[in-house]
Length: 352
Image 1 (cartoon, rainbow, N blue to C red):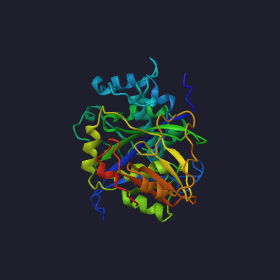
Image 2: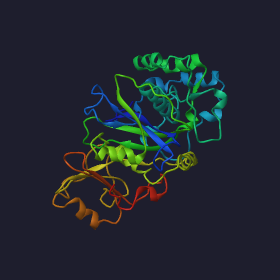
Image 3: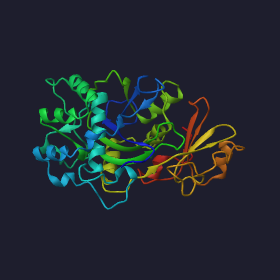
Image 4: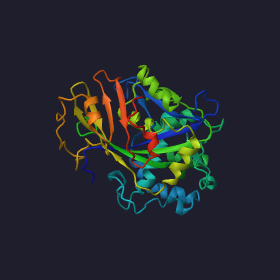
């Protein structure tokens, strides 16, 4: 029985090669703004994703993969590496979380934006770190999106009728985000990354998606500072990882090389400051020891008489975000490395 005070979710950072880009990046990342049906802010930028559904964990997926002759070794995703709570085994009647969380991320990406990260079973064991997406002029994607939106278990029907399988081998574990203890709605979210060789057509689902965009990391951060979109701190943090990485091949090769590695848990703590407030992340000098996921066991007013810059100058190890009360005044300072991408991607006291 799950008695955790948070819901479980999966999200996907979708990279697509874009050699025509006028920037130094040869790729863009898929983001979108949510409608007011699903967000308190119309400009709130999101990656595709959502809550884990019982259909994602159904043992029927085992029969589905077997029917489509997916090699069993591709489904053995568990490793000896200790992983966050969200990856804990769920019992004999549910498939492994290493699979179900990937399925949730793939399903949500299809439901929200119509990108089916699926391929014939014979193509799921490619050595390339890039994955495929299903596309056919004879398939009514919006019709199937509506079916999946209304009943998540119909995603398996979609795959079965078209003779494709979710390409779980092309979706790589990245990080896990735990909502702060003071959040009204808390989530433990598994973040995955995937890589496409071209920008696919998108079909935004009208109930959830207001606008979708393919943006370079710099474009996303600049759009936030220009108040065109609101980039929440978790996205701000993750997008900043890629600021100094211009090549999609480099990022894709790195992501694939981490298969079976540990997954960092990012659980922010917040301090009120004299001039702002800050989210502090693991690795920072101000991050509490033995922080609790269940209750606030640190003093959020500890630094209320200091400014962000004063604390920055007093610190050696930085991994924190400054957030002003009007929300768009945001700055990230980080010179630590949590094992995802070389440390140079995380900037030495970067102020972008």
